[in-house]
Length: 109
Image (cartoon, rainbow, N blue to C red):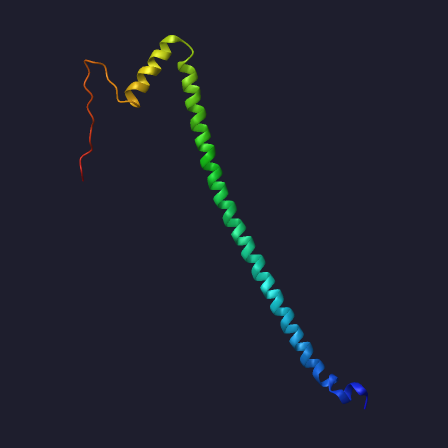
């Protein structure tokens, strides 16, 4: 008998080899799960960021339209007077002295 057989190393080799395979397989499974988790969470974050980006683009477009409208009003004095009157009526709820403002309240269902 050789010294390896006498010490029992040959007999335990298949068991150690099987245990090593199981450990390597488990490690690969954990790594694969981690990679999938990271990919899914990154995709969700990208989707949220795209939604935020689209909202910001819409807000920017609205502000640009408002700026263009204000620039149009400011081109001459007639438009400036119209702009001031429009702001006073819509935003500040002002009216001329001889005017009455009526608010239409929708009927309750």
